[in-house]
Amino acid sequence: MAPPLPPTPADPIRRACTGSEAGVGALDGTRRPYDPPLAPAAAAGGADAPRRLLPGGVPGLAVGQHPPLGDAGAMADVHPPGSQRRSGGGLSTLSGRRRVAADRSARAVPLPVGLGVPLQPQQLQEEPRPDAGAGGEHLRPARAHPRGGAVRRDPLGQGPRQQRAPGRPGAGADHPSLLEVGAPRGGPDPARRRGDPMSWLQRRLDAIYAPQWAGGWLAMRWLWVVAATIQHGSDVLSIPDVWGAPDMLFASGPWRLAEHIYLTPTMAYGVWAMTMLGIAGVAVGGRALRPALALWAIGAWMFLGYEALNVKAHDRMLAWISLGLFLSPAHERDLTHKWRSPAPRWFLIIVYSAIYGVTGWNKVLHEPAWWTDGVVLGQHFLHFHHGLKPLGIWLSGQTWLLPVMTLTTILWESLFPLLIWIRRLNPIVLALGIAFHSVLLLTMSVGPFAIVMWSAYPVLLHPELARALWLRLGGRSR
Image (cartoon, rainbow, N blue to C red; front, side):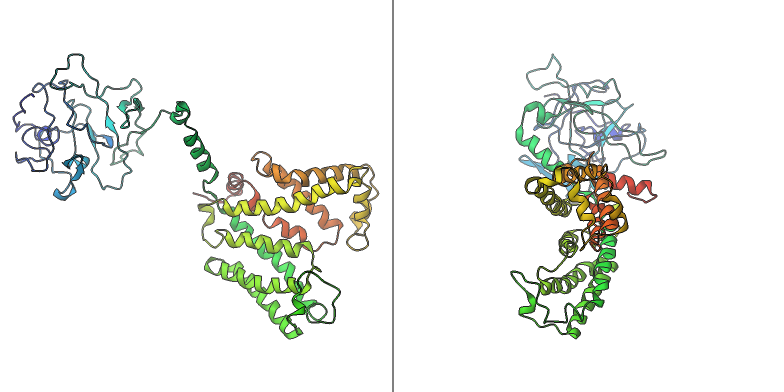
């Protein structure tokens, strides 16, 4: 083993950082008891002198580019005495110690630990020289890459990988740019190259469960407030005839609240007030949203149970949508700047797929008359219970248009559970839904069914497309 170099008073940085026998990181010429074995130069002075690896390999360091430092002046130790860590069988302090390469014109030194800079462990790549002796392998300094980076050795022994320093954050930045660690851009995926199915599956799962833009929940919350207000606001006019009249038993079902709880008109008004108070709490949002939804659910679902099956589709659909809103991050502030779990959105997609899909496939399998000439749709426009609106009466006489509307409706409802998941088709499917419910709203007396169904459309829209639309409309998002 080559003898250690004597300390050079004219070069304190070399003594402090390159591992001279005078001490690693100490300017007073003393060695600390926990200092590791040194890596002395094989020849004194030369910038291209070969170097030996420390026992156990070069410790992992995050490398940054520093400007050349002058030889004059002293350099303080970059870490306190208590910052040593255990490496292998002994203590080491190199994880936080500056280290200057032999070539002083382009120093690559590790950043001090604890400065708030995201550091990634990486080992320097050293090339073995053919004249390596028996006492140990002589190594050259890391060789420069033609594109301005440096070739480093993977700590796991998977071969050299290209490291390129990105541009500095800005003019006058006071911290160095960190070298990127990983495979070069556009290069082959290591997991795919090795054919590791578990790594491929892990990447797919990470992509599926990745957080999504949460701004759609803000729009859904306000649309839900509008739909619920229209849905329950007018119920106060029907309380004496519906919920406060126990003698009206024409509605029946598997479970009827009227058979167990007698609602007087006064009690029914109280339940209605509780429902409206819950809607107001949802409008306030924040921490009040979920308790307000629970309060609304008690009142609204009491009315659903009291009527048994004598309810419209929008009553039950609003209850399902409310469950999705309860599970969502809609109670948080600044949702347009946040990304959250996609699970609540998946819940609403499944609910809507069940509603639309079952309706469409029921027509396909059990009502073949829908596939004929559009007469069935024309009859619905003229139905005495939910039809007879002016636009519906006019459309019922357009024999050339009814088959097109019928076929489009059946295909859209039947394929909705599949097409809604495809990003490119997602906005087209929702646009057809807006057109479908607009026609229902203008041609049939189905209450606020269209508004209730539209309330969750901002969340059903693909989050990336929803964010792009938000930014196009002048909104802000980090």
